[in-house]
Image 1 (cartoon, rainbow, N blue to C red):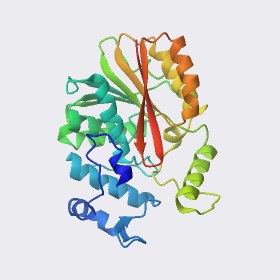
Image 2: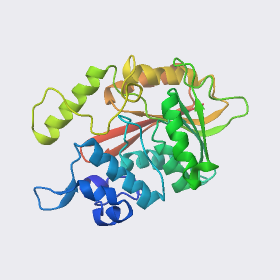
Image 3: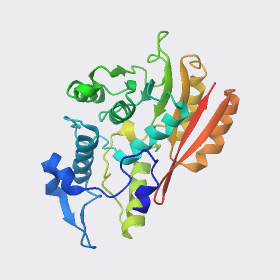
Length: 291
């Protein structure tokens, strides 16, 4: 409860999961419910399929989603944390937070940010993605959920070295840009991160680990990791400063903030903020800037 109560005040996931309710709307979840060592019903959070079914049930129960499937090995996002990002950036918009157009850089096969933003605030979205397979799956999610059909447009980024170019056109204006960048700089780095996580949570040493939330190469790692990716995003953002209001991006590593703040000063931004998000021992942050 301590971990959940640290979520944003508008996050509907503050509190324990009601697994009985979730199983009633998504019966497949019941196959993965176990009794933990405290005698409480739970799921195995180290099992990718269990995690997927839990998050699917949350989308059905709390967001009215009627279809949500993912390709094998695709990133299965933890819904409470993704919702926190949307709620925190909505505070940047202020009182008129319901008339917002959002650009989601790297929307992914799961289309999770548009789902949450559309349901919670009636936002409209453009989602960019470099993987055709991911775009096709996200489009299937949009097409099979009436609440998303007229609110979400997906655009394929054909140049893997560009973030905004080829996506943002002269007719666009986005109130908010969001991005969950690849955090790691290699597959090996991503695996080491999961190994450290298992050791911290379970006290078990292991050489390899299953990524419990899945994830393909473009979702989890890129050359230079998040520092290089966000630095490039900041540099490109200056070109599109008249097409976007607030630019934001998740930053996993606190050590990267110093270099990123230096990039922001070089880009001559008007203002920037660091928004801390807490989930138990995990602290993530949103870097936000505007011109």
